[in-house]
Image (cartoon, rainbow, N blue to C red; front, side):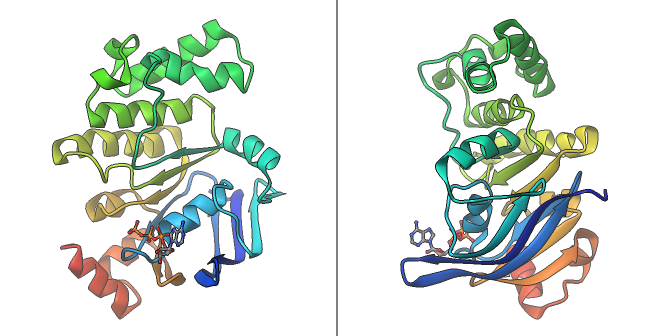
Length: 246
Ligand SMILES: Nc1ncnc2c1ncn2[C@@H]1O[C@H](COP(=O)(O)OP(=O)(O)OP(=O)(O)O)[C@@H](O)[C@H]1O
């Protein structure tokens, strides 16, 4: 875990006149899992969305694999091949089968062979326990299954970094575990580099190598995971963990 793949330096972001991120600094090393935690409105989603160009920013620098992330559309398209993102809402294409959803970007954007892309998609479906659903349509799947497909679809692009923004927030409780298990497996077995925004504290405690704790757009803590959940450095984070029943 030595190679740095992402570096964020002095990032400031405004929505109109309102500043929502203040001098954000952190880095991420290959294979590392970083959890972005904090109260509602603290800027977690905004931070994660600036990393792959979904949001612009007014000053500071984001470097991904040694290249500047510039808020420019052409650049974003390249970037999104390397940075996979899964959101709270699984936006699968409703008129395509699961398999078609998964192979679309690898074949159309990365110009990989259809057969090879399909073979890989099937392996990934097996990994998330959904081999039987290749020919199903999204409407035939549960929320948890759709979210697992959304993860597979991102993985099919062979990303170097995965961003997860509240991926279990809209799921029924019994669906949450299956999705979190996949993310854990990606870390344990694939050594995937990941940045995770979650309200699932037990999950974050299991998986996070490091925790960034945000409040009102400021990083209050950048703390090793084990330490954060045992004894955070700030009273504010302590209170936050208590409020989350941790
Ligand atoms: N598109 C937008 N336009 C204007 N303000 C926004 C926009 N998106 C977010 N904000 C504001 O930016 C701040 C940070 O929001 P953000 O969604 O990043 O917080 P969060 O920590 O992810 O919250 P939550 O846990 O509730 O999802 C909030 O004050 C929010 O109101």
